[in-house]
Length: 197
Image (cartoon, rainbow, N blue to C red; front, top):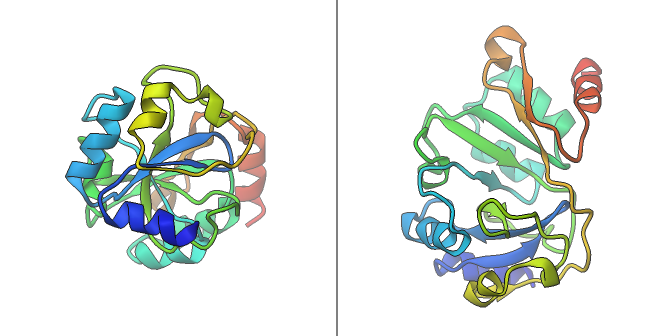
């Protein structure tokens, strides 16, 4: 399945896949055409940002060497897991996935699953129609979304609670952070992990 998934992404396709929280859609985060196609499938406004997902922590850290030491340390204690980290993006990497703000990047590394061996990053967004409920199973994904995907990976039923979004943009400079959206990981658990570094 790893090679099929990577081939789909490389060809500019959109894959429907299980993350560690909900089902998502994935595409090449460097391709404006692939990103536009994924957004059209969801009915999502084009300027909204989405996360870039790496399937291993090592790949994520290697791809973003410009991140400061405190931010990298926080990434190492919070990921992999059901957290999306909002980090500075001074080199505007993966700009098509960043919406109107290429200097900010959403970063995801899910808990290991069916696609743990995937070596390429993807832009990832939940596999719902924009504003709809996050799907826990393929059956909960809208038929139009299922039919529009080039590849479907069945991971059974997932927990169904989306990731917690944590803002680390000021973490290196000021040591401050905030929770933008509390989801699968509580704010208290994020604080405990960062305090334990």
